[in-house]
Length: 429
Ligand SMILES: [Zn+2]
Image (cartoon, rainbow, N blue to C red):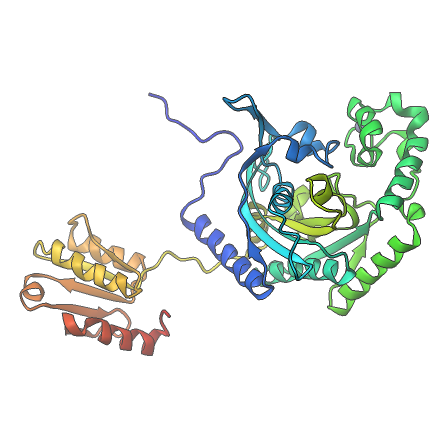
């Protein structure tokens, strides 16, 4: 029989990679807790409509979605991004009726996109995202961007640039779209078929086209900044000023428009300066969305958020030579002797119940193999449990650092080990 393989564009995550992954998640959890941001999990598939609302012209929606009919004849889609489902949930459960005014959630989970797999950009990739909903205030924008900056710094990925732009409010955007339509009107039939669709659905998307960048009409484009009204300009200035006072230098990048349709006002990306990252250098990106909650059936309240790809972070860490402290290790390795597996296992269970990371030899291997395991797992102590220990209700334990070996009665085991580990290794809880 031929070997089965994971589908193209998917990864199995285990061992070292999983441990790095969990370190990243721990850092994320710590930050979210300090910022008092609750976690939300939404379904990995939604009614397809959830991803079409307010976003119908984006490439993600048009080309990359895993959409299927379920057995009840409903069109469902594996989520291509995290924000839409979360905002759908906020609307559905009326979470916006929060007395604080501002509600904050984060998520970590898989996204699905049917696209050509590349390193750090797989068909299933995992994203951590943050959404702040209900208040439109420049300090909120600054806080969300600053949170992203701090997260990356805490992970050691501190060589990056923060690019920021404003798409303006709805009125500014509409004015700009009109200008773009006027601009492309004489040449629309010369553009690619995608751009012909974009021309009607959302001419802003034409600017991202990878096919038509060399077309003459791209040489002198109307500037978004010329269409911004005063409200939008003032708002953006306050965001940038606040970021600067938080110590975050930004690069204002007029070309930055982001790939999703629902963004308004502030959009941003944090981009690795590492040359090895190449086209995959965006570590984190997001923006404000004024109309999304309303499009999901909620009130007209604004939100802002970002998404950060976990696999992308791992690739970036590798490129920068950052290794997370993720060695596979245990506190105590238990070595049963004289067929005393059962008694050894009871001791192992007792230790685990007290929070120690314990491994034992279950396979009745040679002494040499057992010692090798203890060494490979950097055990701080090795416990020997043979006939003598079993008959006397005790264990023999050897400290691998001092090489000191002692016998301990079972009813004093936890007390003794607690004292030893706390004293010498500043151990658990
Ligand atoms: Zn095009």
